[in-house]
Image (cartoon, rainbow, N blue to C red; front, top):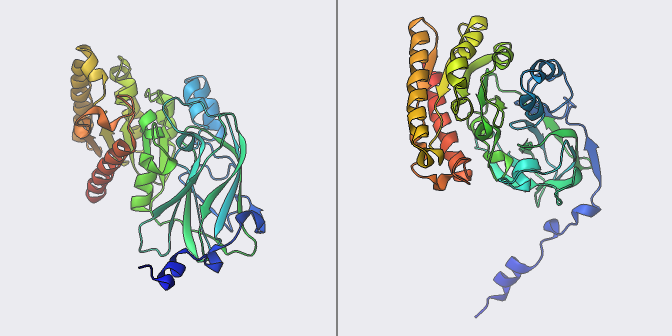
Length: 369
């Protein structure tokens, strides 16, 4: 027999939950307002863009790699952090380009997702995601969060992985608290790599490797993942070497540079260019994961073994010279290709496996330095 009191308690609308977000009054703010918001994981904060390279650096790489120049305007790894008691967080967005990825969702490519915590002792929890409704939508409005009751929370909004953001406004309930988050007193980590590091094929931005690592350590991580374009250009190494306040740099470029002779030709120069400028900067070198090419050709397994031995030898050479450089082979992470979308780019489960490997490796590095 149904208990009417329990039934009513469960199904009767609760007054504070019964509100129409479209009827609320909002105030919209610029994310560049430092008295309200903190932009994480972005270099050159003086430039009011969400590009991963500065305007000067973009000019530098244009003649070297037009692909890096294009991809650096994608906002992968950038986060907006702040505290608010607003129940609703709206965003007004103008994306750089239309959705055009065959192996990704709208949400991962062009959307934003939200994490939150209610005190600093908690881990951040996933909350919501928002993304354009149409394939050709560049200007759009979405709900980044939708809480039922007002309470001060610390918010992370993760930016699109395979699209850029020309402009963004944050809408909060009128009269809400807005407080910028203090930056942790930690050096930054810079991660250089391929499409996998940029975020292909995460279902949403928060599953990106560097976003997972940033949340875990509560530390700023600069994402230098350039899809198909981690080709170890000296000019990119010089940009990395010019970045100050780094704890260490990870290099995960084999899946691009190692598919041809480029890895052998450029790897040592790339390493040396960074260490010449910052000799005390620790470097962490990773091999690629297993992929379908390893089962489609006799040549690729041999190439993979050669690349592994070559990178390990160079790392050992510089380690003996007194530099802080470590080599890690993560080929084994994908025991089978079920962890990938199409035999190459990880699913969210695959992304989580790589992120956890990064985290455990970075723990080791932090102990050593």
